[in-house]
Image (cartoon, rainbow, N blue to C red; front, side, top):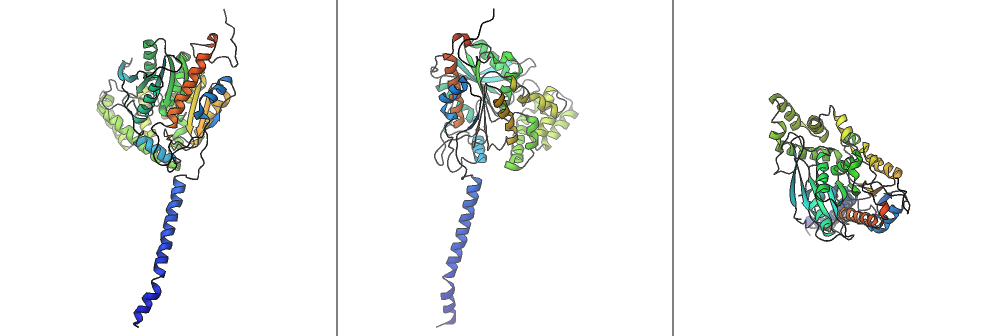
Length: 436
């Protein structure tokens, strides 16, 4: 026998075993990374609710089962806040509808032109009432975004008229008519839209809805002036951060990749600002234009853009002043209409430390309910069995479910408890004494 034949015969059985072991180790490593990154071991649960025990809140929890039932995200990826956020941002919604609306143009006092889209209901409301959802989208968003279109279509089918603000400068085909665009907390355009709806539909009642930055704007709007709460049945804010001043420090941190998201948001803001370069910078001196644009090009965070560009639209002397004046945290305690605040614990944009604001508010005020889900990311909240999400999200269903409950509560109240001012009714049944 040739000596080499013996060597081949004795070594060959060991090679496959060694490679099989390496394959198993590689598969195990990949599975471990997937389980960790996709958070597959995380449990599913009903939202954590903070509220006071009042007749209204007891009625709400009975009438809106989405708030008390387990929220189950898609099994394979739904427990990752990053994937929920990314899918919302890039894919929008599954089978996104195309609701048909009318675009309205409102001239503002400073020469700006605000726009919003108006969508009439596609069915009668279950209470028989005339109810309008006034909706404020997230940063740089408008009525044509997938998540807005899906929510509007669902609301229309439930009997709601919808008015959706297009943030000033956000629509690519609408030119600015003054050197100003939307900011973190400017309520002028939203106020103009609400004023138009109140005048055009004298009998309608309002449900105020804000997503992300829009949540900050609507809460600030309601708290700025008590008159803004007239004819408002309730309000919902989803995934907002409540205080830009507190949030700016967390946006520079790398945990949950927040610094990376900050960079992406800044890049998007640059594109919006530069698309309106002539309108925003055309009327100033060449030296100032070059300085502002130079700082804009080199900005890598939202805070730098806010400091170099955004705060100047309203004449704020510093970034701190801009964030102080435009954050709803200083106004939200003045809101007396029923208010639902929704956040997700795995939202990569909203740091956990910011959630002490809604938590404390719900503990102190009877009209506030704070719902915190384990999963959902930033404006994700997809639902589905394993891989493919359903067209409607948990967020869509909970907002409409909450609105339905509030409309039903208002309809069944004694006439003497109904108020046009938005003031909360007496805590218990019966009528308050009328003053002469």
